[in-house]
Amino acid sequence: MTFSVAGVCPETGMMGCAITSSSIAVASRCAFVRNGVGVALTQNVTNPALGPLALDLLQEGVGPEEVLRAQAGADASVEWRQLGVLNARGESATFSGAQSLGIHAMAQGKNCLAMGNLLANTDVPQAMITAFEQSKGHLAERLLQALEAGLAAGGELGPVRSAGLLMSAEPSWPVVDLRVDWHVAPIHDLRLLWQEYEPQMQAYITRAADPASADSFGVPGDE
Image 1 (cartoon, rainbow, N blue to C red):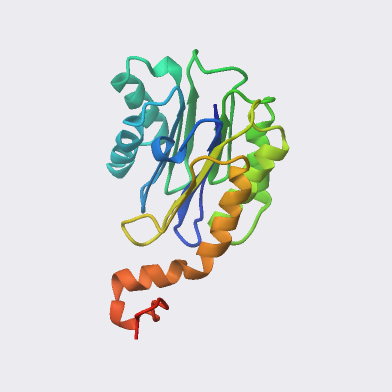
Image 2: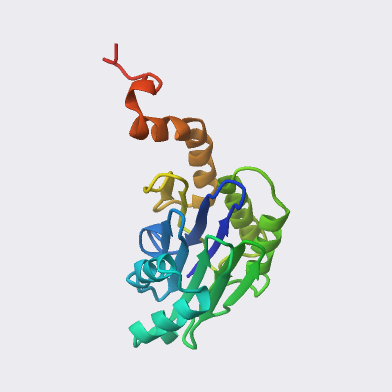
């Protein structure tokens, strides 16, 4: 019930993912990112516990393929899962269990991975990989372009209703965590959210690190 893309930017160190689904609030349980470590996606019939497990193992230096094996060992129902792991070096691994729903497919590219289930066709993940690899600029923009390319390639067989964009950079907390939890056009709305948030992103990072140097909050009552 989901298609997603994850990517890293070697130049900036940013890493993140974009995801969409016919299910409500998909990003809240399927997308996991940790600064300097990597990205984990757990979807299909989701077990959210597998996301933090993957990030903990990546942080210990375990490779993506071995992380998948560890996830399988930790989940007796792993055949119902679709998993993606991407480390900070751009190395990736993907898995679709035998019980993955409907048409499902996976693809890996340079510094990225994509996958989906209940898809309209098997070309969707590769369309996302191609869009990501051919795009330039901010990682968030590249991930959004890839998600939009997946939708244009057919996307999920049914209408998507939620979407999310999750990214890390130098701070320990996600510098981008935008979600559309239920809407008729969630990918479109996610792009609008990013367009509003992008000009403010650095200000929020500065406020956390050095409030005295931050710009004015620009709200009523702030003298």
